[in-house]
Length: 215
Image 1 (spheres, rainbow, N blue to C red):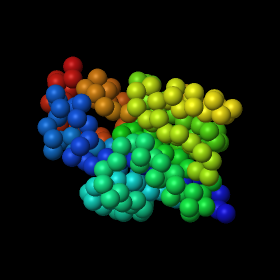
Image 2: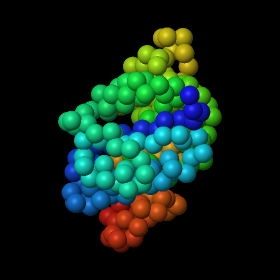
Image 3: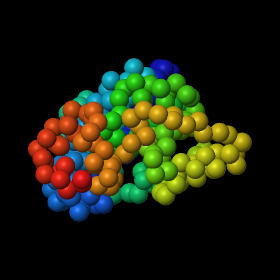
Image 4: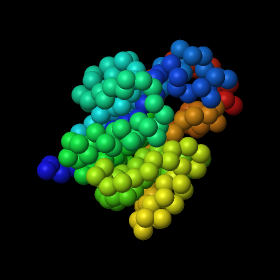
């Protein structure tokens, strides 16, 4: 079997993305923002030396076009699934393909770099990146081994506790671009003062009013 990590980015339909940003972005802007961040996560994955296979899992054809344009695979969902169902399906598919190292990534990580992904991959199974709000932005696992996905509030602690009950531990990548997802206006405010991926940077440049709205 080839060495390296199979990466799957979990992405909901663009029209359903980033609803918590409604106070500062209209529906079309939210969809464009989600697409930009997905593009940057794909660029990060493509720049990771540990990445052997890259895919995006989504029911949205627009998401699929972005993935294919970046040279990634599109894992089409028949219907929109929650994160836990999507992650379980991605893991089952990876297992059927003979993968032994699977990394699941959120689609809204505009600070992510290939180096961040490599650092997580080097931690080995099981490892992950904890979001600032306690969520799980990335998971590294062996799809051939049982794993209960528990995405939701404080999911990183829930994943760690679930593994602990099995006598396993969840190593945490404590710094880097995988820790910051963007779901709220304060998170958008942080984007304006930091270096982000090219697509996200271009999107923000088209909306100069944002700085005033999140101030």
